[in-house]
Image (cartoon, rainbow, N blue to C red; front, side):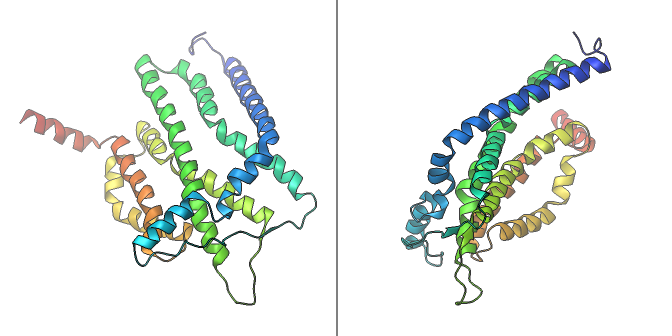
Length: 273
């Protein structure tokens, strides 16, 4: 049935089945996540809490070659984690399985969104949007990977080693560790969707290239501030590790955004010349 022939209730019925399929996929992946969670928790989630995490070993070798970098060569580094709530481990097991499932099925959610809106698109629009959704899925996973392998470990190590007083010994609760882990990983996945969001806003006429070019300096300051919040270590190298990917996303977004009508006319004039 074409989009023109579908009534409001037909659309509502299609949306209901779309949501139903997404919920089923989420349920299946959550069950799978619940089964493997003990192994996943020890070997993936808790990996940044140990001295042999690959980022720390890489930074250790780098700090030995470059003076002024923070010392990551601490073989005794280990997060002391405690739990003060009797029910927390079980509910964390459930909630973490759910969020891991959400992350894993994001490509499928985008596919269902594509399948729902595709009947309303022309053939040339379908080809473009299909690649856009694929690109969005890849960028989301890249963002989650950056959050897991760089942002969270850097933030964790700094905050855990930061002391207000020598009389205070830092220990991390299970809830605090998991909240920061899930937030930073998931948020970085969303941050890496900035080029896709910029493209979509450009397609509906909200964003133009001139906006990004006009506010480039403001964006640099804002991204530096954001990078400083994410990794409050104080050294320029660690700050740049976060800032450079964020700024690269900003510049990449400019490439995907439509030019202003004046810029298009100028390009046409130059071609004629």
